[in-house]
Amino acid sequence: MSKVYVAGVGLTKIDEHWWMSLEYLMTEASLKALDDAGISRVDSIYIGSMLSPILQEQSHLGTLLAEELGLSGIPAIGVEAASASGAAAVYAGAREIESGRANAVLVVGVDKMSDGMAEEVTAAMMSGERQEYVGFIGATFYSINALIYSLYMDRYNVGQEKIALFPVLCHEHAVNIPHAQYPFKIKLETVLNSPYISEPLRRFETTAIADGAAALVLVNEETAKKLDTPKTELIIEASTDYLTPFQREDPLWFPAIQLATSKALSRAKLERRDVKILELYDATSIMAIVSLESSGFAERGKAWQLLEKGELGLSGALPCNTFGGLKARGHPAGATPAYQIAELHLQLTHRAGKNQVDSAKTGLAQSLGGVASTAFASILREV
Image 1 (spheres, rainbow, N blue to C red):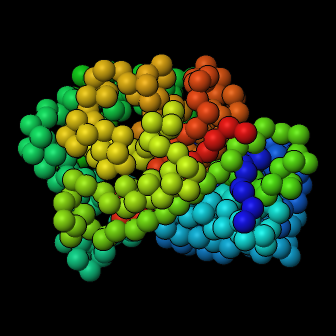
Image 2: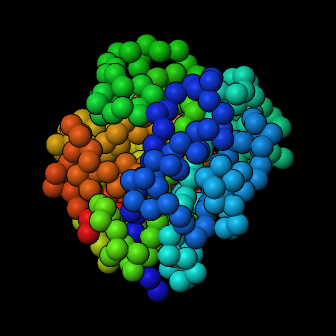
């Protein structure tokens, strides 16, 4: 089985790109990734998108992109796993290389949320939930998160000001990031004074409508040796759980994250202490906190202590969301996992600019679909 390497990445700036089409975004990211890898052709294409069939009424993205890149004729396949769609595309591309069926694969994550009204986007994001049980009563992704938030504060006797530190951290890390949607600092008071989305979840603890595309070129060992470009080794694993967290034994424990992370670490022959950079799925502040605990990087009920002690900052013991995370870099739904993995690649190839974590040789990205009903754990390490 061949090892898998990331040989090139391409990122579009995350924003509300009224003047750009979905097609334009994924083509721009792809061309940047191919140029970064120093190659012009790949054996196949995988695209992850959650919302394009709903908001753009556009499926068949693989063939569309192959045409735009002048690569018609090669296999080009769309992959969907809610907001983990980009990671699902990486997973599929990596498996094709491991099997020996491809030497080089282009993987793209893309979504364009600004084409829908706020109500349409909210409804579209709920397509990753079980509509028959949850969607029909008018619940939203944020209202489900709010219930988890309330339960967490009550069970562990934690004040909101502890959990709300996470978006403050992410905005601090986004300041120097050219592709970030919100590259500016915010204060804890700003978060705590922002209006409720669904009590106790506040506006500045959530993400916003965003458009973006991120692309990666994955290659096998033989091809990697021929390319004179920075590379990282990729190991990716996945797991699933009940769609609705309140069907689980404990809503404050995400088994899919725990299992995917453990599988990836085992395959890489690593321990949790070997992970030096962590990319968390912080679509809300409470998701980041529970994810830290579920993946074994913090004790249950105590993840917020890592924030207070500065352990998750760029100079901390476990730098987290070093490009701003979903909150500040931006969260274009299914494209987000591709951004996470690409950003780890930039860190480990020493191209993270002012946010470079110099001592890091291994990083882990956690990419989630729904409220942790699908989880991907992607380990990148320096080569």
